[in-house]
Image (cartoon, rainbow over the protein chains, first blue to last red):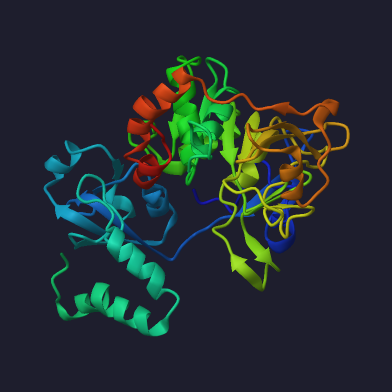
Length: 161
Length: 247
């Protein structure tokens, strides 16, 4: 949106105003109440995973998530996608949010890119992998093994499926 | 889990008690990790509140939004929700909730998922039901370690919403408007007042001087829960749908 802060209802009276000094209480300039303002979140880079993208960066993302919002807030946006399709196929495709190429810096074809979480109609969550992650998160040896199996092998051209 | 000696599960009882609070035509919103509230909203719609609008986060069928959680939260800020359901690792005597951390915020003993939208929803949703799947002295405390969402707020703040009631596996608590503290409205069938008080970390007087017994689910309510509701929550909460319903 390009504005420095946003008013938010509620929050005042909770401890967030103590532990987050960047959350400020101001007088509503258009009313008689106090209101909280929070600073803009402007990421340098956003990585979002789309259902489909075209080669120009136009893409369709989940409407259940805030990926489209994230794309519009970030300086650089790298889109990975289950499928790369033509622009005409993209605009006539499945339910989801359209993100314009205007916001997108790069597109990567990455089937399975949301795993082990789910991705629309493409695949469900991989419960076994998620359970392994939960166990691995508590142990540095297990975590290294998990990283190697599920992440680092892609660096060496591993099969992403 | 089935309570020994009863023909319904604790989840069915809690969902039924929440569902009965909803009037026909009201808008009911359900957030993440809330299988019992989701069941309650669907039960109400399938029984006495057929014209109610139901939104369930994480559901394809009950999520008519195109712009993610932003659109949902903005609708809440516009006072369009009559009901929302919040929980907390801790709930205190005043009805404050803690979803952030056990212990010190900067050096937590347990780091929790965080308050998310609760710090706004508790203020902007007309009737907020707090729910908890355990009722112990550790979860119902005199004062929460960190207030992620406050039951009361300064008078200069615009606040159309707030606490409606607290539903636990043992009892229903409500706020005494004069003292600002939670009190005991009803105990569930087979649960003694002593047991509720022994499992609560603060003094719990009888609301209005009288403690009722919560009315158990009727045969009709159980039929709807075990049929339509179980089916509807299965895609969102498969593990819950398997174990929460009796019959």
